[in-house]
Length: 345
Ligand SMILES: *[C@@H]1O[C@H](CO)[C@@H](O)[C@H](O)[C@H]1NC(C)=O
Ligand SMILES: *[C@@H]1O[C@H](CO)[C@@H](O)[C@H](O)[C@H]1NC(C)=O
Ligand SMILES: *[C@@H]1O[C@H](CO)[C@@H](O)[C@H](O)[C@H]1NC(C)=O
Ligand SMILES: *[C@@H]1O[C@H](CO)[C@@H](O)[C@H](O)[C@H]1NC(C)=O
Ligand SMILES: *[C@@H]1O[C@H](CO)[C@@H](O)[C@H](O)[C@H]1NC(C)=O
Ligand SMILES: *[C@@H]1O[C@H](CO)[C@@H](O)[C@H](O)[C@H]1NC(C)=O
Image 1: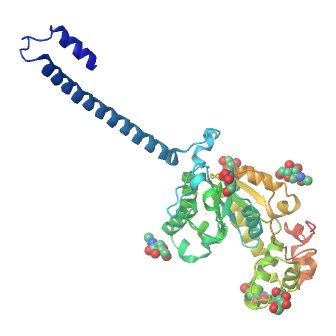
Image 2: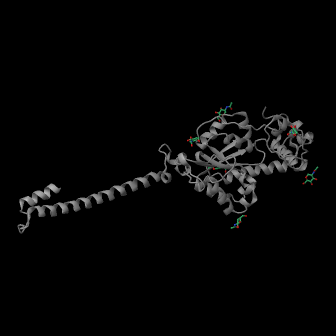
Image 3: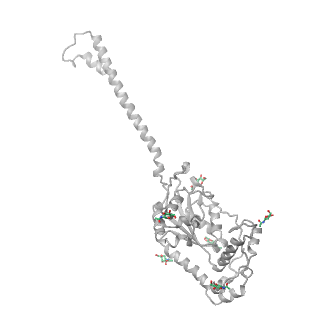
């Protein structure tokens, strides 16, 4: 560029009046001018380079907001999330998709056992019975606030795996505000893409015995003065199973019917959500059912394990004080099958 200017000036045709001063001075002026021009151009270039690198940095930060795995089907997109927890950074897992779920169940239906199985998966955080605390379910805004925290990965429990969770959820009993606020909760589930895992027990009589025994133990605390709903050794299970409840004959059928109705109602209420229905008995008989669950949650398949030991095993006749009464009442009703052995342990 400087050369060009020199050439033009040497030529002289550029000038209106030929210079009278010495050509050396003129050359110095032109040189100075071209230097100023050069510095100006350089500074503009530098500015552009620096704004360019700035853009690059913001681009690097963007994927946190715009993560999307190419392998995800279109239908799946509303159910795939990239939470940004308030309390920590998801670090290298920031772009791992997260699915939301809720285990909807009733007390003594094997949901505690089922949850320990799920939580043995390295990428699952099922945070327990969060809504057993009354304040959290006292109104729909409390419920939504609690759910938001869970699904934003900001809830901390012994089960939370935090940054590398691929599925996050909780265990929710039907009588913990779920039926009461079903309309808003279904809306929330469908809006946020929460999948429901129903877990029920087919044999409602076995469930009733477990409820009665658990209620008794809450008062009596058979295990060295500690109430336990779940145990980890056959010895503890044996102690808890020693108690044989007496079933109130008058209330037996109405109670079974009440539980049955509640189950059907829950299925009806949550019918529009994405859901799967599991039965405790099927899970015990056939562990490959757990593959189905992992497929439903779209998590990598793993062998799931639980350390929990079943408390009530074997024949029902040995588990109830007034078995003859119970047997007679159920005979000929649609609940008769409950008295038969339905699985071996
Ligand atoms: C909802 O319940 C929470 C906790 O019990 C309470 O603090 C809050 O005021 C309630 N909100 C409404 C709108 O009733
Ligand atoms: C599961 O967790 C592991 C270890 O934290 C992590 O490396 C992996 O990316 C996670 N997988 C998914 C699907 O999120
Ligand atoms: C109760 O405590 C005693 C002494 O600490 C111990 O040996 C026993 O195994 C405990 N029993 C149960 C059921 O935990
Ligand atoms: C069974 O329950 C009913 C209603 O709660 C009660 O009136 C009755 O006394 C109970 N029967 C026994 C044997 O406990
Ligand atoms: C759920 O909805 C489907 C189709 O809309 C219907 O066939 C089914 O009976 C419903 N189930 C319940 C439990 O309401
Ligand atoms: C176990 O469950 C799987 C998947 O749910 C099913 O394909 C298989 O037939 C079942 N096996 C038995 C023995 O029931």
